[in-house]
Length: 384
Ligand SMILES: Cc1ncc(COP(=O)(O)O)c(C=O)c1O
Image (cartoon, rainbow, N blue to C red):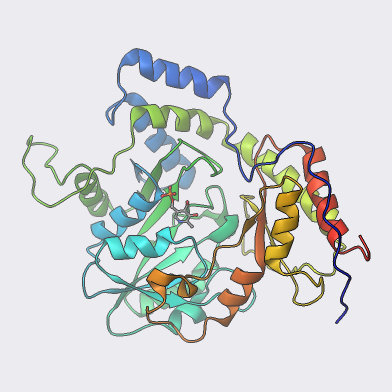
């Protein structure tokens, strides 16, 4: 173990660098103006249909329904699958809280699952440690743009009669073995929040190849009302629809998706090559398919730098860089502390507390990436 001296505070950034920023241009502006001019500003309108058709095409999923956000997409999926009180759902401990919150919204109980030994995503072995007679489903989260290893997870789910819901909030455009994330499980759920690779402001979507499930989710999305019989409600539903205004943004973003992902890739590769020599950063996370670049994650190797993760974040903030901590492992947070755990959650704890996320968005400039990397490199320079 080598320890380096505590570095002095770094000079402030020439301009603040946010963690994320949507890339919105003339195409988005023209679509929104068209939606306004048409007066179709609630959830009926051609942009919603166009976005659903475009996503269905991209994902190879016959049924896509847009939703008001990613959390409502997850809840709609669970409700559509009939998951409710008395059911347990396996959820990764290392995820954004919405994954587990959706299980609570459905009235079911999350059971927390550790990360795989070689990745920050959960794998089949981790899910297997959490199974009980009450387990009804598992939530696969393709965290930070990297797909989970799906084949063993699907086999485990098949063998144990478990439904698979994919949380693809951070993975639109990623694949596992050539198949898009969101097209493996019973339902794939997406978020189009402003920091996501495709944004509608607030928004989300569910994708499925099951026509009956699509029909149930379509009704639940709109108050449980029979689409053929006005004000006839045959179930207790929600209002989880996306507006035509939000979808207008999404149609433009979908048209630009390849360009947006390609730009993110260039910047992520620049981070990687700039930071490649740093002994205090961990590497060796292998994705089973084509990953996409959402925020740029880093994990500190223990004890080498001589600074805690939060001290590193403080230094970056002082330099005007809005870096963020990795998601806290859910079991450390008050609402989830007493949930059943699928064995030890050591790896999620380790990664959750040693990780951080760096700014990444299409309009981030190369010189800003270089600036961020220079600040990080200076942290480990003896006497800096
Ligand atoms: C992994 C994950 N799941 C779910 C969500 C919830 O999405 P939303 O914020 O659109 O409700 C997010 C994003 O914010 C997320 O990162």
